[in-house]
Image 1 (cartoon, rainbow, N blue to C red):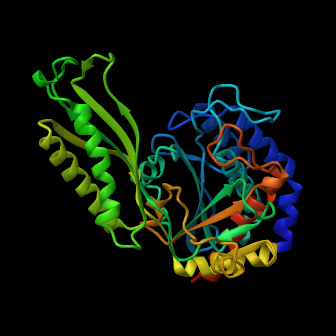
Image 2 (cartoon, rainbow, N blue to C red; image 1 turned 45 degrees about the horizontal axis):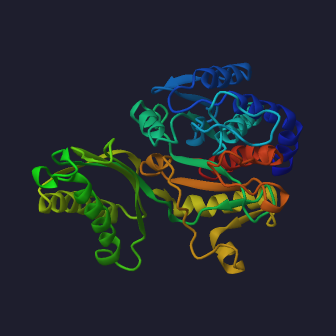
Length: 409
C-alpha cells in the first residue's frame, strides 16, 4: 500500500472517524471504569471483521495481518478521560462530569481508523499489527495492567508506537513530531506524607506535639534535595500539592497529610530522590518530636524512545506527509522551534511498554492558538482540531506497514 493510497483511503473515512471521536467524547469515562467506551470499541472492531480480546481489567487487544510471516508491531491508543466538567464550546460536549481533556478520544478514534485501513489491506501486511486499546493512562496504571495480562506476548511484540495529540502547539494542525532517541517523558510518582503528632488545645501547645510545624519544615527541607543534592543536568520537579490538617482554629491537630508528585528523567535520580524524601521526612519530624511516613502510590517510569525506531519513523512519516508536515526534534531545534529541550514535562504510562520493547512516541499538532485552540491539555476549555484525525489514522497504519516491511525475515 503506497503512501498516496493510504492517505486517500484515510480521507475517505474522515467523517466516520470524526463521528467515532464525537461518540467517545460525549460519553467520556475514567480510569478502568470504561463500560460504554469498551462496548463501543469492541463493536467497531467486530464490525470490521476483527476479533477483539479483553486484556487486563479494561483493555482490549486485536490483531490484524498474520497471513504472512513476520514480526509484530504494536499500535497503542489510550481510552480514558479525566474527572473534569467540560466547559469547551463544542456541540458534542460531555455532560456526565468527565471530559476527554487530554485527547484520548482522538487517539482511540484514530486507531480505529487505522484498524479499518489495515484490515482492508490485510493481505499485504508483512507480519502482524497488534492494536492496543488501553484504559487508565491518566492514573498511570493501565499499561502496566495490560502488560501483566500478557499484552506483549502471544504473539510476542517486537516494536511499539504511540501517538499523542497536542493542543496549542505553534505548528500547523497535522504536523507530526518524531521523538528523539532516549528519554522524552519523565517518570512520575505520586506520594503521601503523613505526619503524626499529638493534638491539644491551641492555648496549651506545650501539652501536645504540633504536626503542622513539622510538616512545614518537611515541605521546605524537601526542596533542598534539588538545590543541594542533584547535579546541574539532573532535571527533576518535586511538588507538594495538598496539605490537610485540622478543623478548628484553636486546636492543634493530631495529624497532617501532604500529597504531591515527583517527575524525573533518570531512574537513578528517581531512586535517589525517593530515598532522600523518606529520610528527610522521618528525620525532620523526629526533630520536632513527631513521626512521619512516606507512601508512594501510582506512577510510571521514564519513556525511552528507541534509536532505530526513531530514525525509521522519521523516514516513514516524511514519506507519508511530506517534509513540510513531519519533523524530528533535531530539525525543530535547528530551526529554533524546539525550545531548550526536546523533553516533555508530562509523564506517559506507555513508558512501561518502552521499558520492555523498542518503542517510539509521536506528537501530532492538533490546533494552533491563533486558530482558537489556545487552551492546554487537561483544561476544561481545551479543544482539538478534528481535521488531523485522518492523518493520524494514516500515520498509525503506514508506520506499522513500513516497519514490518523493512524488518521482514
